Length: 170
Length: 170
Image 1: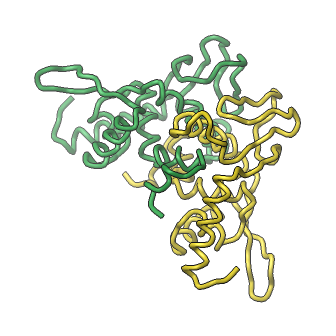
Image 2 (image 1 turned 90 degrees about the vertical axis):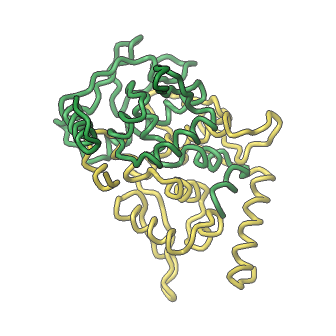
């Protein structure tokens, strides 16, 4: 059975996985959530090859999960954004984060990679956090985020390594 | 960057994906949730090769997500079960299901693949469902499930095809 067959399955989990069941895909979504919307920068942070990233972005666009916006005409340059359908994945990504915070081998004193505060309730979105308002779905649009020092350093290191490999200067 | 590097990332999403960021892995979890706990039966429903399934099960066991239990001594036969750490993925899988129900191309009159009822509240767990009791995490242990006709037929067909390919009779 191939993954294309999964799109015909009666099982919604199989259909969801046929679209987003790929770690790279969810890492791309993480980058877009973090406001990192450009090809090179996404590549730098995920470590994907250009070919793989390009393929995944096209697939996500075809599936209506992200959309491409021109931000520079000459030369043509695009940014990627989550669509409403893409944002509907936010609760999945939030819970993956919670699971990773709990089971990812972090120490109790480790600073969170990103400190996230739910804007309306003012509560810190930690591993055990649950949406306080009923009747409303979680979206990363409703939070304020601050990247912690350790994760910021990791990201800066990746960015520098990527730019050095491409022969770019800052 | 390889996926092994992801386990060292400060980002809990990256760490979670390094363990479960694979569609096969989450499909295996789906089968265990459905009470399908044996190697051949999991293989029949997921369509994985023996080698791939075996590799994934070993990895999940090493990561403490599932455990293996002997159910037959001669010849030795094992069943697989979710550990507490594995059950902590239930909310992620529930929300993937919700997303798939909403965006997986189902018609409004399509019977759900599995009708799930939250035992304590008696509510049907549909695409919009949210845990009614606060302070408690969702787990599939707390629901009653009934496989719908279409999905049951799809599963029976896969099972029959698998058994025929292996030269087994029912």
